Length: 298
Image 1 (cartoon, rainbow, N blue to C red):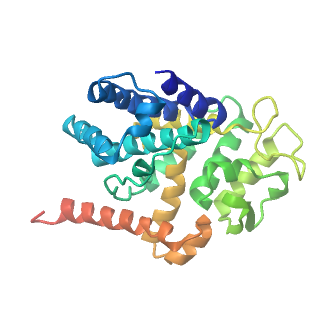
Image 2: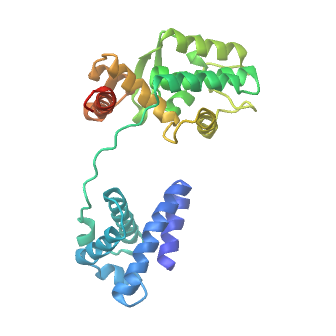
Image 3: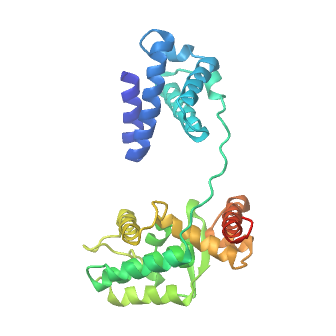
């Protein structure tokens, strides 16, 4: 199991993957190595891993399917194995083309899970009420308003500087891959930013982080994630009510209101329209639920 532990150390320490991701890789590969011990009848090492063929991996995946794993879990298990082999090729020069070209079950695109309009409003209101200080409440409200009212990612909201004050009609956002986009701000979002700016106890210089932690440093995204976790617990919302779900809600509620899909693509900063089209599935799913619940023969 020396290779197993070395690989997990690599993805944790060198690649910096999150603990839950490392744990998922570890679980998948522990099951894989356990299977190989019985399948090969010997301890698993570089030589035995190099000799494995596609048939061996398919046998393992078939075993996992009999254990009740879903298509998504099977695909993840294969992804873990491929990641292991990529690392083995770089570190040990071990190549295995058969495994590199294996394909798992096709995974259907998961629909985003936005929060409802009512839930978004309640989260923003409660963020202000539960804060220990007025300026912290104003800060949290401003961040959540940017996620829900402007469709920003957490990283984009927390990447803003004091140049965002006074709050403009159109906000310049540095998005993924260094792509810049201009996002219009509705009055409620501008008002939330202005309120925070007036209450913040720190000088918010044009090149300084806009959102600050209690000690004055740049606000950590984990603080926002923890805030949303507390809010959904207090409001009885599901675990899918995350900061990103507020961004999803921005898109789906615009779409439901008749906004053009390409306009939503620009607002979200998606490179491809196909990425934005997933929101049409959310809207169709909500319509189907409405029909099912309301139709007299549903």
